[in-house]
Length: 332
Image (cartoon, rainbow, N blue to C red; front, side):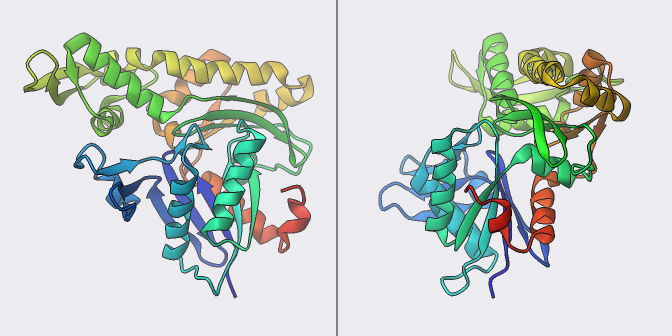
C-alpha cells in the first residue's frame, strides 16, 4: 500500500515526508536538462552543482519562482523523479499533500495539483504554508489563541496569524533568499565592476550576510569576472556592505510583519505581544533577522529549532491526524 506523502515544494528546496518514516528527502529544487533531446541529466544536489557550469545545450534551472510554477512540464518531471526516489511506482500511487504559498493564484494552485497528478500521485491536496509552518513549530493552532508565524522562503515570505485552525490575517511578499542573493550580486557588480554568479552570491550571504549589526563584522574574498577586462578578479567585501545591499529586501519582510499586525484583531494582537512571533523557513537562517524584526516591532521573535523543516513537518503532522485527507481538503 502506498504511503501518504507531504511535500514542501519550495522555490529553493523540496522536502518530502512519508507517513511512518518522517522526512525522507531534502534536495534543492533544481533540474538539469539536455535541450538537444530533452533528457533529464540530474536533479537536486547534483543538478545544483551544475548551475553556472554547464555547456550551452545543458540547462540547470529552477522550475519554480516565487513559489509558483514557471515551467509546468519541467516541474512535473521533477516531481516524478522525487516520487521515484522515495519509492513511488505506477503500482503504488500515494495521496500527496503539497504545501504552497498562500499568495499564489487559483491558476497556479491548479497547476501544482496537475503537476503532482501527472507525476504519479493518486490524489493531490494543497495546504497553505503558514498553517503548515505553525503546526510544524508546535504552536497550539486549534486553540482560540493568536499564533504569529513568519515564513521566509527562497522566493516568497509570508506572515500569518493563526487561531482556531484558520488564518486570521496574512500578508505575503515575493521577497526571499534568492532576492538577497541577487541584491548581493548587483552590489558587487555596481561597486566593484565584478560579475559573480548565483552560487557565489549565496555563499557570500551564508558566510557574512546579516540583517542586524553583529558583534563581529567579518569580510570575505569574492572571486568573479572583471567587467572591463573579462579577467578573473578577487575583491574584499565586508559584512556591513552586504547588510546594506539586502536592506531593502529585509525592510519589505519587516513591512509585511507590521502590516499583518495592523490587520490583526486587538485580542489576537495581545496574544502575539505576550507569546511572541515564530520565525521559520530557510531564509530565517539569515543572521540577525530575528533581532531586526524584534527591534522594529518591539515583540519577541523566536527562531524554531529546524526552520527549513517546519513546513513539511507540519504537513506530515496533519496527515497523521487525519487519515482521510478528503474530509480536510474537500475543496481541492
